[in-house]
Length: 270
Image (cartoon, rainbow, N blue to C red; front, side, top):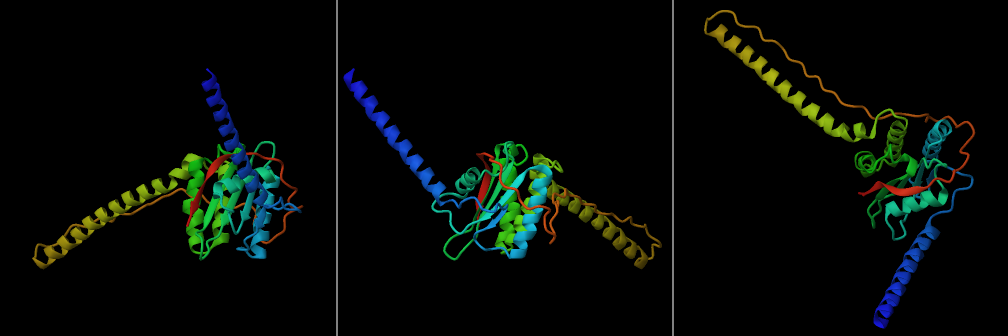
């Protein structure tokens, strides 16, 4: 009996030490996250990958969206993840800054640009209230089909703006998460089916012309007329715009509202 109590006591001490280590790591990470900007801004380019004009144009767009819907999309670029993952960094930043409001309707887009020494890394983290619109699958789609392709072309601004447009369209109900993630597959299917029909009809048309020509040269007289086929492809357009331009926002960003993040989202490297 005494031995059992001794083992239990030792195990409790081990758990306590491990808990302390995890707490220490979280505290260390929180200390490395930049302080909440003052004056508050939704676009914070700490890595200096955007021009001043690009920062202000994007800021105006996101401030206007926040003023209209209360949803806050916060864009942050950094030079280092300080030894953690982009998902953890973005989540901790969203919590520390309080991105969103009491409805937890905040979104953090984190970008660490690629350098000669390190690969690029980015993450989208969502507040609890945004998980319905920005599922993990949707965030993964935005990361790999919108952000990273643009970043590979060194077009950081274009990729971030397109991602913000898609997030705005999703959160305002222009299309659903299911429609957004199925878009590429649906477009590909329609394209292949349409192309196959086009090739088939074009082949029949060419054969009819060839038979007609042969009949003329062999003296059989006229020929049959061939009907032409048409190809009609289609896809779902997912881009939207909100504000933007070079005009200034009405009153500037009023500040974050204390939103919370539960770890929903996705990340990717290039």
